[in-house]
Length: 77
Image (cartoon, rainbow, N blue to C red):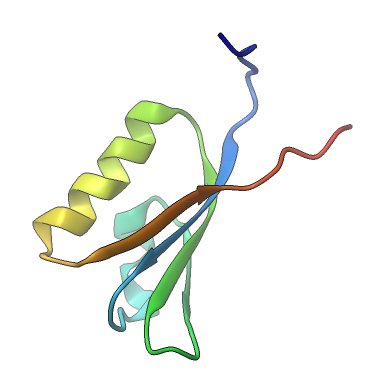
């Protein structure tokens, strides 16, 4: 089992296709960035796994194809 911290985990989530940046508020203010490959990346802090599943459920409810979900390395402070 891994040690839990009170710091949000930073994630990068990629979906197929382009999604406009005006959706950021609906996705917990994650940064929405188009990729050169024609996809969309969401990035930013996610407070816990429940919030991550919430973001993934919203993507699914929109019928968007999930490409990847990648936690980013934690910065040592």
